[in-house]
Structure formats: C-alpha cells, structure tokens
Amino acid sequence: MVEAADAMVKAARVTLVGYEKIGSGRVTVIVRGDVSEVQASVSAGVENVKRVNGGEVLSTHIIARPHENLEFVLPIRYTEAVEQFRS
Image (cartoon, rainbow, N blue to C red; front, side, top):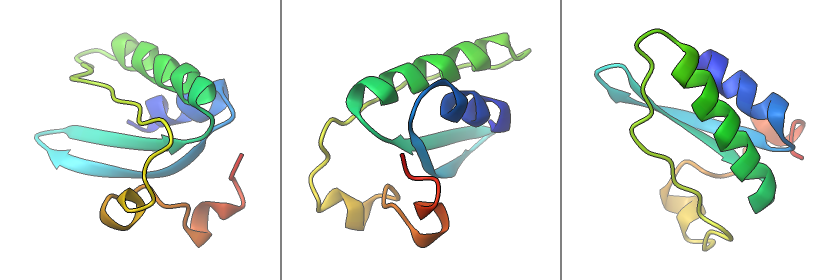
C-alpha cells in the first residue's frame, strides 16, 4: 500500500488525503485533485500494485466533483495535516 500510494502522488498532481484499512489485508487509498490528475494517479497506483507479488486491485472509483456532503461522511476532506501537500 505504501509503495502504491507513493507511486500515485509521484505520478500526478494529487494530494493523498487518507487511507482506510478494510480488513484481510485490503486497503483503500484516497487521493484528491483534478480529474485527469486523479486518473493518472490511480493508473500509476494500479500498475504498482500489479508488480507486487500477490498484489491485487479489487476496484477503482473516481468521483468527479464530489458533493460537499460527502466530505462530512467519507474520509475525503483536506485536513490540516495534508494541507501543505495540496496540489
């Protein structure tokens, strides 16, 4: 997960805003930025996971222009901790 997240933020102008441990070794990585940048970032993360022995991507999903209500329900907010890295 760390390698994939690193590849994602290096591949495009995105901000890593969080991650969630889903269980059974599954992790969700959450990035924000312009849609095209997020697409490039997700592609880089997927390619990185494929190179890891036993790595598997179950799904990816990009939400263009998330409704402001989602920021209060899902862990997608720009927090103070990540503000300095905001693209």
